[in-house]
Amino acid sequence: MLNTTDKIIKHKTGLLNLAEELGNVSKACQVMGMSRDTFYRYKSAVEDGGVEALFERTRRKPNLANRVDQATEGAVIKSATDFPAYGQARTSNELRKLGVFVSPSGVRSIWLRHDLANFKTRLKALEAKVAEDGGILTEAQVQALEKKKLDDEACGEIETAHPGYLGSQDTFYVGTLKGVGRVY
Image 1 (tube, rainbow, N blue to C red):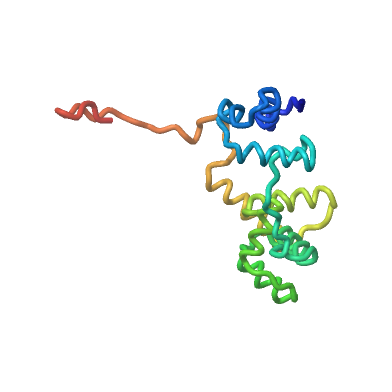
Image 2 (image 1 turned 90 degrees about the vertical axis):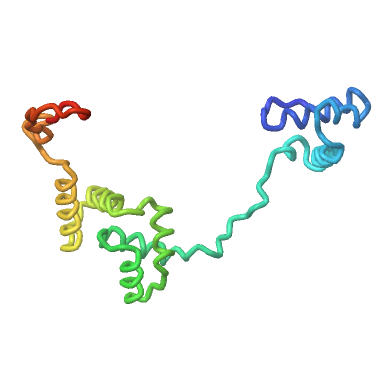
């Protein structure tokens, strides 16, 4: 008799227990709505590795051959905070000048792994780095922060005297048109 409280494999152990109780594998499989082939796969898994062998295991192994080495990944992350305004193609080209060879898509995948995918997240990483280290900003970093400030103002993120001050609009009544209604 197999005992488990895990919901993931409870139906598997239930099938094995029912077959043991009934003494008939075909009848147990029919009641549970599973094939006999499935029953024998579960049974051989339990015989080989115990109840833990019934857990789903992914057959897919991570392909680490596609990953870049740690030195390259570190250079890409450092470049993202040193020059946050650069895109993935320019970052790749600038790193190539320094002897670090990584494609633009490789730069993007590294940025995605480290949550540096867009300009704003790279600026947040820069601000966190400066707050942590207390270092001095370079000219490129200062320009990027100023650009963000200008972008925020262009998007409507500015200080006002009170909420809705810039959203007010002056309207007046023109008249009524037949079939349309009131026109303002």
